[in-house]
Length: 414
Image 1: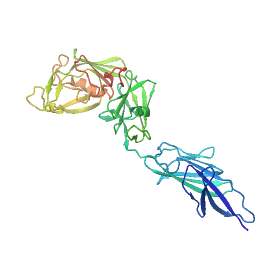
Image 2: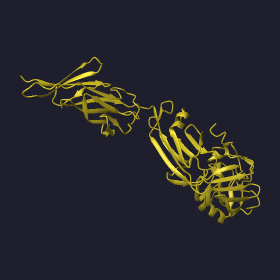
Image 3: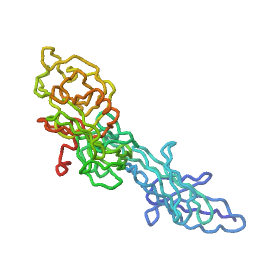
Image 4: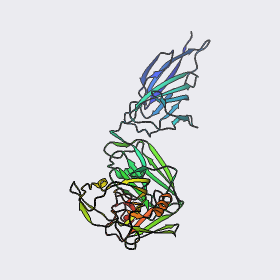
């Protein structure tokens, strides 16, 4: 009488059923609490079948789990048999992985949010029979997802691989408000060559800056990475993905515009390379149509170059002054060689109409230059270069441009 060979498959950490093509199966709970699966094999002709050892399969994450982090590894191991293959997939999207030296399988890739994954394991038992086991789990579904970008400033994204001036801070912007700022800072890694310490400073609930104590040394290489995937930033907000970018610091360029001497001197790598006559803001206040009071000083302190425009249309209406009877009013005019240093509208630019360069401050807040000097600045300065304004009574606010360097390092981040 022929006897059917029996395959016993136990499942630990998973409640899914066995799928074995062409086989009947039945399950029971063993003494260990694992499910044991019995599948009919091919009949052995001429003699009783060899006895197969019990096969126990362990899958992590456990079957039915619904809040799995997309960062959690998927691990599959077997006792009493040999793993032939493992597939982990959500629909047509597979998770990469590989067999380990101990015969187990481990994923080598991350998963995505809010997806149900099926683990399919093919196992060969000690008697040579092959069966399959399936298990499913679901990754967590965030209440909200924050996208992550790197900025040069509030006007432009960071050009990864680009070169910037010595005043350029690292800027990470989130698309959602971040309540757990400590978790966000822990997720951000700033690597510099040569190595230099630095601090975080939150400009808003969604934007954080990082800077060293002093201006960057020329040639410094900076890489910033955010381990966003799977990171909870508070109130159900999770990072969308892992992101990274890098940039290099170019030569050191620092310009010093003096409100008293009406000169703007430019230093490259510590040596003065240009001394320019200038005219800064005339000062004073006026009230615009919405009742807001505005001023006309060039603000004091270290500015950082934000952008450059060959031609920029300027008018008093751009900052809300539309009353033609107001002595500060001026009509629109196309201005050449404009290098922006604040969001509120301070530029270094050509001012051929200003005949007080080097003698008096009569601008509306910009640093007026002769056309040849403004053209040189436009072609020489880069984003991240520093323009220090001295002896103005009006300090530059932190958020009007990149005012990071207006704060002493001991107070930065507090």
